[in-house]
Amino acid sequence: MRIPTGLSFSLAVMVMTAAAAHAAPLTATATDVADTFVDSASPTLNLGGAGAMQVATPTSPTEDLESTLRFDVSAAVSQFNTQFGAGQWTLTSAALNLGTNFGTQGQQPNNPIFASINAGNFIIGWMASDAWIEGTGTPAVTTPPTDGSLTYSNLPTYLSASDQSLGTFTYIPKGNVVSSWSLGLGSNFVSDVDAGGSVSLRLYAAPGSDVSYLFNARSFASNPPMLVLTADAVPEPASLGMLACGGLLLLSRRRVQR
Image (tube, rainbow, N blue to C red; front, side, top):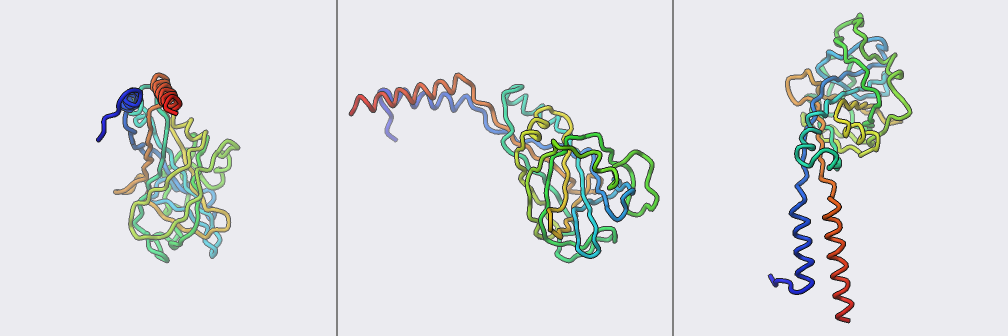
C-alpha cells in the first residue's frame, strides 16, 4: 500500500485518529418483566398468567386478541453509559425477539381460546403508559382475578395519543423458531429507552388482517420475549472538527495542484 505524503498524509492521520477514538457499537438486551394478552371474547378476563400470548383477528369466529409487554431497560442503558459515557450515545437499532412453539400454518394451539395459526400482518407499537398490571389469570380460569390486572375492557384507558407505531410486520409461520422484528426508532420510544426505566410495547393485528401469531410469554420455560438494543457513541466535537479540518486541507491541496 502506498504511504500518503504531504497534506494527504496529514488527512490520513486525522481520519485514523478520529476513528481510533470511536468505540464500536454495543448491543444489550432488556428483560421482559411483565406481559399479558387480552381477548375481546372474554373482555373482563385477566390472562397475565398464561404461558403464551397471541396477536389475532380471525375471521371466524370474530375475535380480537392483543398482547402487551413491559421491559426493564435499566441494565442495557447502564451498559451503554459505561461503554460510551452518560449522554454520549444514541440508540441505533432495536428489535423484539419472540419465540413460538406453535409456528405451523393452520396449527391449533392446545387451548381453544387461541386461534389457529395463520399468516398476516400485525403492528408493534410503543405505549406511553407503564401502569398496567400483568395479573395472574389464565385461559383456564372463568372468573377474573381481582388483582387490578389488564383486561380487554380496560385496555383503552392505558392508551394515549402519544403512543407510537414502531412498524407493521408480516408474520409467516416458519415452525417453532425465534423471530426478530426490527423496530422503528420513533422519537417517543427512543426517549423512553434513554430514560433507562420501563418500556411498554403493544402488539395488535393490522387493519383488515386475519393474522394469528402465537408466541411465548415470559413465564414459559424457554425463549421468552427479549428486547435487543444497539447503541453507538455520539461523535465528539473534537473528532468532527478534526475530520472537517482534514477535508479543508485536502480541498486546498487539490486547488493548489490545478
